[in-house]
Length: 116
Length: 142
Image 1: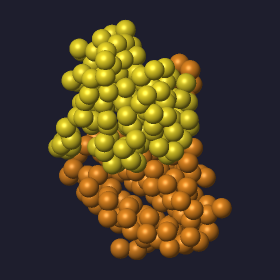
Image 2: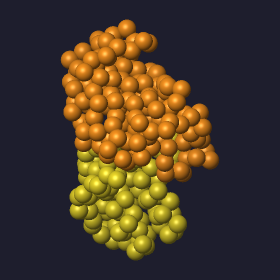
Image 3: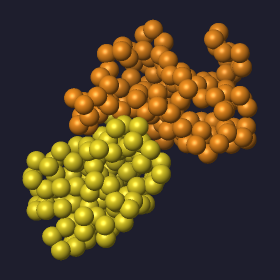
Image 4: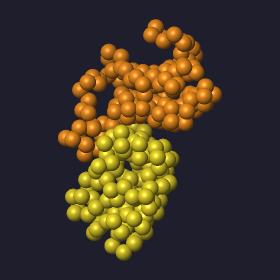
C-alpha cells in the first residue's frame, strides 16, 4: 500500500463562536489531507460555524471536492454549518462543474463569512 | 520509449512508471512543458493538467488498487492542434457506463466519483478501451 502523505499542521483560529481554518496545500493529495485532518480533529467539538479559508489552496481535484462534501455532511450532522472563503477561480470552476456551488456557502472574504 | 497508436496520426511517446503519484510528476511536467511550447491557453493547460491528474489518480487508486509494484503506462502526443494522452493501468478494468453521475441530485452529496466527470467537463473527448483499463484524453487547442 502507498504511504500516506504527511499532512501540514492545521492553521486554526477561534473567532467568537466560529472556528476558522486556513487550508494550505498544492495538489489534490495535500489539499485533501488538510480537509480530512479538519474532519478528524475539529468537527467533534464544533459548536456553531466552521469556516474554511481556501485562498491558499492550489490545484485541487476530485478527491478534494469529495473531502469537502464529506466534511460538510459531518458538520451538518452535528447541527453546525460550514462556509468556504475565497476559493480561487480554478476551484470555483471545479465547484461549478460539479454542481457543488449550491451545497456550500461561498464568501469572498472572512468578514463576509462571519457576518453572513 | 516511443510507439504509435492506430487511432492517432501523431506518434505517441510512451513512458512506463511505477504506480505512485510521485512517479507520474516527471511525465506530467514533460507533457505540460510541451503544452506551453505549443501555445495553448492557460485555461487549456489547466484543463490538461487537471484531467491528467484525475486519470492518473483513478489508475493508481481504482485500477492498480494502490499497489506500487504495478505500473502505469502513459502515452502522449502534444501538437499545436491537439493534445492526446492515454493512461493505462494493470487492473481488472471497469464499465464506465456503470459509474454513477455525481452531478445528479441523488448523488450530489456522495463524497466520491467526481474524477471521470471532471475529465469529461474539461477535455474535448474522454474515451475508454473496452476493458476499462485505459483512458484516452483529447484536448483541442482552440
